Image (tube, rainbow, N blue to C red; front, side, top):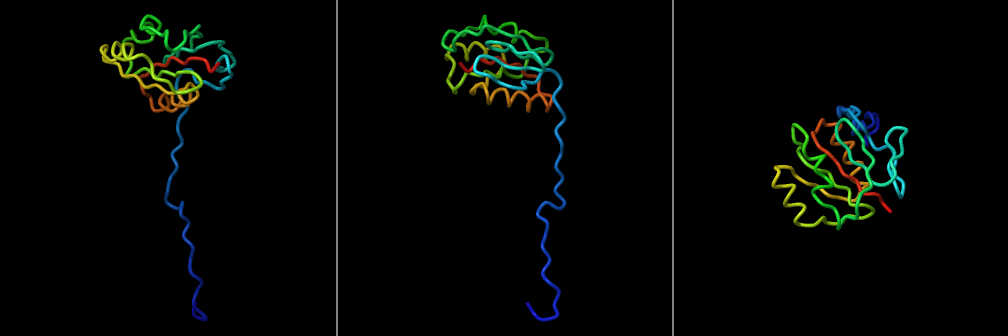
Length: 141
């Protein structure tokens, strides 16, 4: 630096970068997850949880390997049909039975599966984007 020269200016790396706030999603949002259930608002649902854009429904979910299309039909038969089913597979990511995936996809509905914590977070984010989805979350324990 030369004597008498102004000091170099530091650029604010965030200057000009707007941070858009995300609107809270319409409908139910999972506020907390415990080993055996989910909290939506002030209500704790023991066991599994089914989510639609309008409602959170407590559910005595079967084990993932026992999950059938009959367990999910009420979620999938909405009008209009959901874009996809977000399936929370419990404590860890596990793949649902191939037959179940094929039946869901044959209805023209996608399926995304992940552990239930990730699925609960994804639910809130996707709903804040206005996505027409449904979810079935298996308990962690």
